[in-house]
Amino acid sequence: MDVKLPRLGEGADSGTVASVFIHVGDKISKDQPVLELESDKAVASIPSPSAGTVTKIHVKEGDLIKVGQLIASLDEGNAPEPVVSHKREEIEEPEISVAPSGTLVGPSNTPIALTQAPVKEPPAMMTGVLPSPSALPPAASPTIRKMARDLGIDLRRVRGSERGGRIVVGDLRRYISLLQEIADRSQGAPAAEAPAAPRSASSQPVDFSKWGPVHAEKLSTLRRTISTRMADAWTAIPHVTQFDQADITDLLKLQKKHAAAYEKKKARLTLTPLLMKALAVVLKKHPKFNASLDELNSQLVFKEYFHCGIAVDTEQGLIVPVIRDVDKKSLLDLALELQDLALRTRERKVGLNEMAGGSFTISNQGGIGSGHFTPIINRPEVAILGVARATEQMVFRKQKFARRTILPVSLSYDHRIIDGADAARFMVDFVATLEGLGERDIAL
Image 1: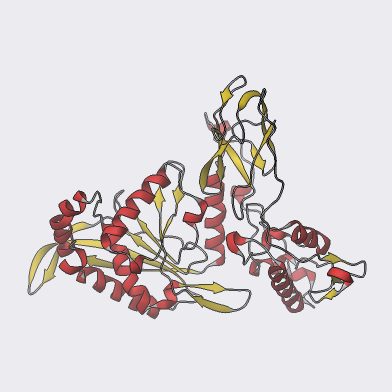
Image 2: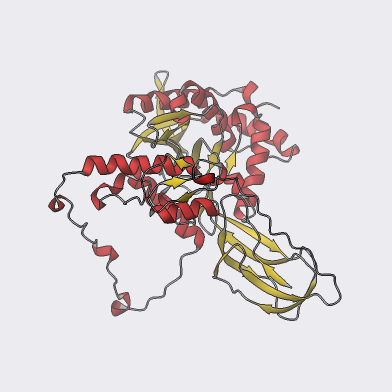
């Protein structure tokens, strides 16, 4: 039988082969992993749908493969042929097509008010206001894909509103409306006003071996994803960073005092759960920092949940899993969940669904060292907290100098939504809340 790549989950239909576990001649059992597939920011094991002997392997490490692609061939011997279901769990879309007149029609040739087709992409000088093309294949039903082809729309530029970023008819309608708005604004602009962007020197191919020995390493899927998202966030969001520092001397004493009690519960009481505890309080007081900008509909979406993304440093790159409902969980629960999630993230066993839905992110570099830094916002969030290494300093307090432990913190925020005064008030409240955590907040 043929072993093909199964559906990977909502919004994911391709990936790069990270490891191949089988060889020709191997006898494998049903559900035995045959390969690891790197998809976006997760690695998933792909199981065999049947038992048998491997007769041929059709992929190798580094191959980019899609759902339905042949992975391996098995000789099942006398095993009964399995019944293969081709039913896919697609979101139902209406039967829509583009008529020769350029009008979208539904069942029984009923006209659908979307726009005239085909749609022309905007002038180059206006594309900066559109969503940047995604590096991953868009999630959409065959109907939507055909409609986009007929209309001349690049689906990679359309933001999906359904779960997993799936694109539906309403998303196409909003995108086309945006295109029309851009076209209207650009009418009458002479071609001379839209000069081609000069190519930067760094983008020109350079033969570095002219000056000495070199070697090259192909970027992993994860690193390409990080590169795309960081460039997209930095280009699309006007970043401003607010700096401050917190005196955590008393907090560290409480942390040390209760560490043993947490260890008995198999939890490590680190600074990050304490940061999350303080953030949950401050985000409720400053809801704008827990929001997202809906650019297509010109509205700010305030989230009534508090899901905290935690930047985890792994050998493959930075990955941001999400801890949900931090405001509803005890400090012990946060410590246990963070411990488990960070471990599974470093082992690349965290699921795609565990990296989605964050409303605010913490990037804590204290364990590595160094001082203040300016983190890049995890789009579509509007702010991110950077935490550096705490140091002992002589501080003038109560009419005398005292040795205190000072924690540098920085807040990068989206200046389209948040003003400097808002950020300053947020940081003042955050520092006061963190410094004010006491015995009743930490004791079990």
